[in-house]
Length: 266
Ligand SMILES: [Zn+2]
Ligand SMILES: [Zn+2]
Image (tube, rainbow, N blue to C red; front, side):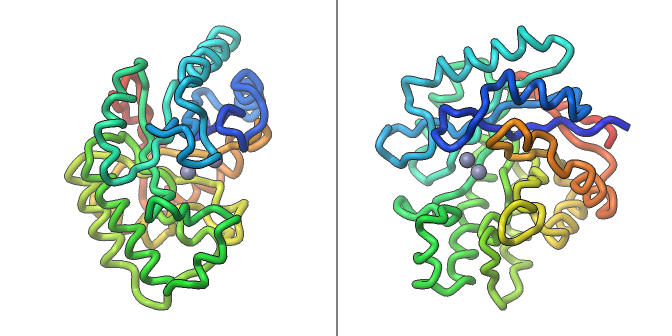
């Protein structure tokens, strides 16, 4: 049984990843993968928005790097995607980004719950201490629901990112998950099983089994992503992610070409 496509990996253009796309591709073949997709952090309308993404002028260079990997490794299917931050008010910018290259898919992610706070940024961990955890989770899932409703994305990234540092609310988050997943059903977007969570303080795949159970009940499709920021992370812990998905009941996974989904057996 071959491993599912790894649709979430980065390049050095985002300023916090190492290794060129050809290095990720080589590692993918060594790990037994048949398909990967690059989804580096997209530019923002303003280049000074933050310091962990490519500049707008580098978008063509990003696409060229992925094309080089495609040419050098014809035996591996390599897709062209982006991980795009969803922020309310940025929808027009994202539509324009979509028109600039023939993308295979967009992963919509929420890292920012306000213009100034990316909740997964270790440099801003002190912000968590100023707020109630449930307040942060609620704000995050409100935005994630909007991202799912926006019709801008094929996949919603790391759907319970606020657990990254292991800070969890005491309250029941089921209603937050349900609202988000109902929006995903309505717009037809998938959610990813992202193994990077296993490498963070939460020590758990994003999203949790609890959220995955609710997704399965609603027939929300799934994809897989390592969120690799270095070649050796490509396909990392994929057997764990597949085991989790199967134990929840999933038997299929999606891959994308030119923004069209194709379902494959898991
Ligand atoms: Zn990153
Ligand atoms: Zn992300």
